[in-house]
Image (cartoon, rainbow, N blue to C red; front, side, top):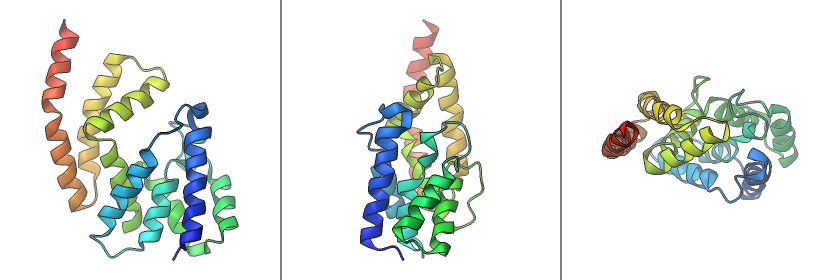
Length: 193
């Protein structure tokens, strides 16, 4: 179990990375981590889990972005391990947190319920109108044009809904994707003009 003091240090560390180091500081003020933590904790209440592992994994899930957008989710592994050791997190909990980080985007299969929940929370936050804005901004940062982003969004949203693990997340995703149908119809018409 991770203490409140340890969690506060994890939160501050994750925010520092996310706001000041990721994308050269361009993401300062971004509330993505806060939304992921909230969603993950909500999903966790439906399962028998160590909610502190879920919360820590949610705070730290994007720590790779300091170094890479498309590379390994554990690109920053040494820095993360050094940090969580310095906070006094037990070895077993360190491994669980690292697994949440490495499995958060679906490239590595989530083997624990905590990792599945963090994955689902991150995926849900990238869905619906806010998710479209976030994913568009992220792809624009790496130079994608409008047409490529729109094409990616459709596939991204459909694939993400299919990759969810928990029943609760699947229900939320279906509702969010259904709400975007008219949005994409409008975009299709605009792109034809």
